[in-house]
Length: 150
Image (cartoon, rainbow, N blue to C red; front, side, top):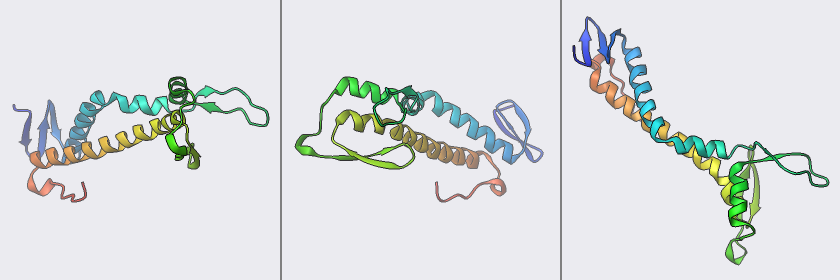
């Protein structure tokens, strides 16, 4: 038997017999997602590096808070380097607070998790498109998905 065949109204896909159209779609999605996650490990690393898990020292009048490894490493590398000409960049802190800074290390430390989330979103769009294309290639015409938005 081939890797993809039709058997009495159901499908056979990579050793899975009697697969319904919905199960076929999920099998293809899982396969495509697994292929991309093996390659895109830096996405998870950037998200994890940006999580605020490292305790910060207490400063008079401030509550105890945490920082990320990305921020610590960026501050160690760039020290007190600032953007030339007094340019200030808006950055996002936590869940939507916007703060302006001219320190290079601060901008990098705060941007790392955002870049990781953007990569994750792009991977999801790519996987969804590949899944739809492969599913429509295998499925009978009546079972095909006519998505036009990805």
